[in-house]
Length: 397
Image 1 (cartoon, rainbow, N blue to C red):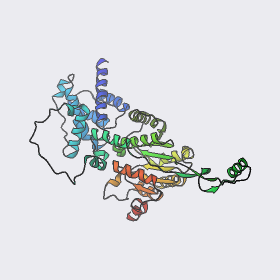
Image 2 (image 1 turned 90 degrees about the horizontal axis):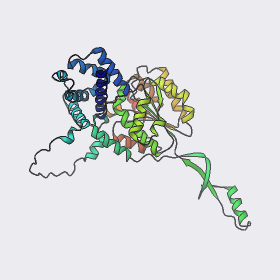
Image 3 (image 1 turned 135 degrees about the vertical axis):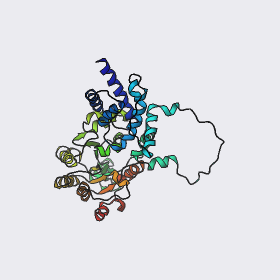
Image 4 (image 1 turned 180 degrees about the vertical axis):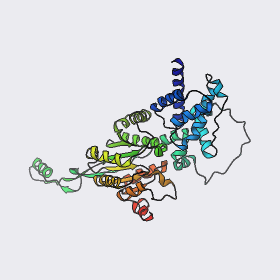
């Protein structure tokens, strides 16, 4: 039992390292990894590597990060000296490997302990006309960011100007111009004895419309879930009427969790309350549950809905068409945010994409900081840009 407890502590520390390196891992995955190791046994280092890999890694893009983290973390473990002599056979090369090495080094804090390189003769370069680091970060895909860049992106999201959209309500309020307010005009004339009648005016009261976010957290969206949740957390902090729902194989309301002031605590509460994180996706069933249980509660007063998903639904038939059409008719504006638009050769050929596309008002990319800033501007404006008109993609399909 003592050895089992030590192994659990080591697995928890390893999971924290992977989370700092950018891989979404919940506490349930650590327990599953412990059970898998107990069943498989501690044989060779390669067996131990692939046992943890099969439980903790859900996407191919995370393989390089896991390799670097495992190689560095478990090699330092003095308890498993025999296993430390063996290295996993699998290696990854190219850009993803370099990004993975940088993420793991930053997560372990090795970058701060690296010796400074010897001083070289000072060389002056003319940097006029080049792109700044901030501009590179704005255009960099969330999936390709290192751990330090993800932290910089979080700070950029915090400093981002949130949308300032307003809609007219049925209620009136005093105004310097507009309709004549007869009641206030008569009351003002009584005070002056009827000698002087000064007209009073009223106009429709304006307020910020509700924002509802439906965010896909399936395995294909795992690289974008955390930055987007940070964006919606900041949006929730700066305006009151924001509701956020997460869906994979089921629908979960995380609005209360995102009202926590600290962003790390808010995201931790979200991950604890969502059992289907980085799993499969059932868009039609999630939309059906939202339409039945939540639409009347959160879609009043001209709400705008942000649907964040790649649309990769296996069953893109009549059920998905019916539910997305119902959602479209229940809100004032439905904006689809799809990270697949980062590819220049994107085509609306998947069954789920073809089912959703005719029932949205806008189709926008959401894969970097620049796209989030563009979304804030789009929410403030009332006109739909021709570039993001879904009819463009319907014609191409």
